[in-house]
Length: 312
Image (cartoon, rainbow, N blue to C red; front, side):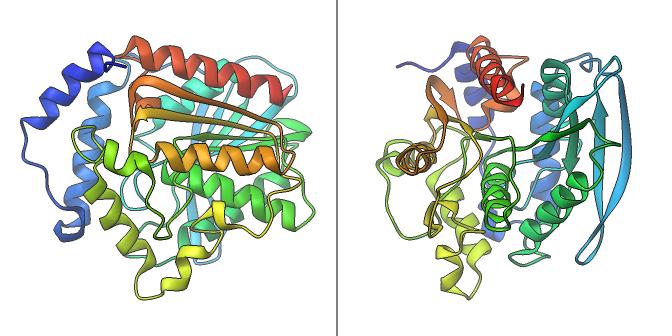
């Protein structure tokens, strides 16, 4: 399936700039590049929601910044805790502001976006600990954030989707039920398994296989056992039974494609309600591209629609 035309044009533009190795580049430089890239694809006019406010939440190592989006209107709403992508290294509340606004607007849900501690300054499992802390904080304050006690959900893209899946596992293990999980092209397996999509989509589609290997090396550090820890590799959890219903989206031209599809399979095999779609013509990061790509817009619209069914 050919690339979406708008995304093909974007890739051509990106390819004109020499690509830098993640593992040898200053994280501050990587983060600036990520902010610039996302600014290119964000809507020119911010999506309108009822209100947006910045706050902090107590975390295991200090305050965790969050941004709270409230839908227009009154009455009870679902609550969605959102974790941005970025390979555990880049990404922040601003890079995914338009994504959080879209989720809030379309789902008519309160969205709590989380700026967790990132690599390499903060070692595994710092990001997971922050995400879990904020989700538990939200669960304890539903009356202030949505009001529907049975409609707390998690969502994320890429590394953020891995964090969302891991938080869902932790909630299940604690006997606390989430309403749903939205996982956009999740990174689910940091073991040495070689998926076909790694080689099929090794270069030329934004996220490269070398990027993925560098990010995995930084995440694991010197502890190889991290690779099988569910907080890094939700696919490797001992059990997937009893998890929240999931919407899982992958992109045909993404090295992570087969990891996401593998996660959908293990959830289905465990009896979990799963909607899964592999979107032709799209690449890693398409959740951020709905304003510039018809293909991405169609995929994001379907994902949100299916997710909304599970939040009702």
